[in-house]
Length: 151
Image (cartoon, rainbow, N blue to C red; front, side):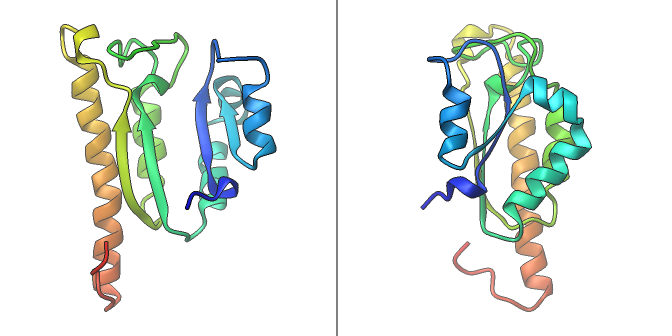
């Protein structure tokens, strides 16, 4: 079950389905950090907020490639200028090392919309970062003498 009070969205920007999308999600308990708010707070403050929200609870990370600026991921169904850089994504994900990340996915990739394959290459890098988070969790459990079974 997804706990909306432990859910964070980062980088929301541009057009949305309807007015009030962010407010409606926040009314449900989801923390929405628009890209404008991300810039206001700064990367380190956003990372600290994410870590506080997820705590040591089992965490599932989904990374939508359209969170990235189209310069880094042109092959998405809804490219929207003014998004995260690849470096932002790497730093945010690496900052979650030590968290209880149990699983992850990468979504919003449309290879046909990116003839040079930049989106797929960057998606592979994001998935590598996510797998490192899960591996670090498993390694930590094994080092602590706990069983990694059931991962």
